[in-house]
Image 1 (cartoon, rainbow, N blue to C red):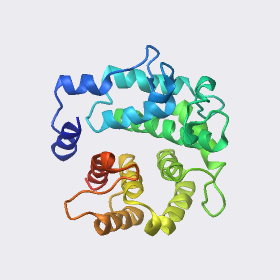
Image 2 (cartoon, rainbow, N blue to C red):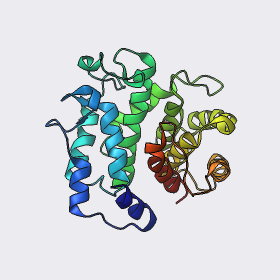
Image 3 (cartoon, rainbow, N blue to C red):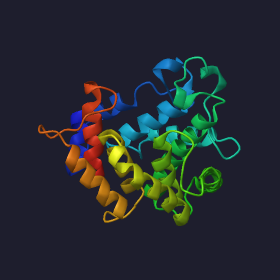
Length: 248
């Protein structure tokens, strides 16, 4: 599957049906994907992760991904997203039901993928526009005057991407300035994820933050061509694929 992701990112090669079916496996009847820590209950975090893998295969337009996106849309409550209460005992910190930091992360993550879907479709306000507008406002309400963000760092660049798509450029720029200040201390994995997310929603390739991110990736690339993951060597390929996506 990783080889198929690489081929698609490099050349746009369509993966085989077997690869795509494998990538979609495990989808719950309601359309989401469960996490390994969540048994059969679909998870917002796990569904977003699976959509990211499918995106690297050019598969967001397939029925499985469309059902996953519709399930994400159905999970919005009061402009934001939160995991099902039944996952509280097993959920990791970034997905804990009832935790405000987790709620902000899940909102940014879900809104990001709904934004990507609408962007790909090319529809005016988009299929999910009515959900994304209040989500963008909720995200903006949690930004400090200095662009600071009281939650996980990943939420910052996902939020900047969502706000960019909502034409909330001032709010997005405030977050990007904060990210620029922290870029030198960010891990290669975070820089790759940030840059690929911003490029995915159409931030210009010559944008100052993306230019700085590419410079940081060049500085941290290993002699074998890859980049290290924050989660151990088993995930180095995932980080390297993100870096490739960020520079294409």
